[in-house]
Image (cartoon, rainbow, N blue to C red; front, side):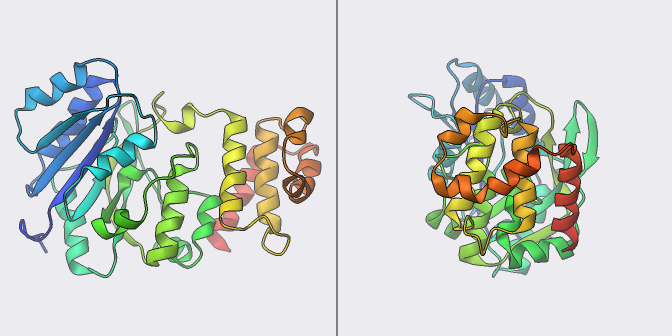
Length: 308
């Protein structure tokens, strides 16, 4: 079925920072959409006027441009764009990402029309490695597991980047991105949404292309200590750092992390952790000394998430 143009107004929120050619590609993919009941909110975190010039060149009244007085950084700039949105549905689209085809928004809207009780949808996506596209792989069975046990996302983000999601405005009235985080920000947001709204919808078609391997990606700009500390923060946030909730696979996951970033030998870092955290991670630290390749631990983690 085709989405009605009058059913939902969609706000496409673009938290932008530099790279005008990527913003142009992103905007072009939006204005080419067959679904036209949209607004495009661009919040500019850069320190030049280049992005404003890109926006003005489109001469499209649906594009609303906002220059941040002071750089907000991620994810505060994401939240700034969402707060300025007036649509029924909120579509985050990072400025280095883009819609895969012209019916992408219509496909999202159609999903909301068909199942209005689901307020959080995401789609498959392509990882775009400089023009070489690789489709994401995900089963509906795994989506059902995540819906039932949202904290599994801590072990593996099977949803993907925020650009692959679309949310009903009711969601962002209650939940925004945690601005204390950087590396775990999307996972924490997804878990919060699932814990409150319970359901998630999955579209088995790649509607968005994600620029992979970009210097802009959080995965490429966050150091190892920050990544481990944000994982600790997330586990504490959901009260999972208790002996009766911290499972063997959780221990192996932290073994993988502290081995990957050589933190098991960093006494200074360990000493600044609180005593409870040191106790919970004691087994992980001991295991990290074993001559096991951290990528093998990552494989074990992925298998566990998908099949157990």
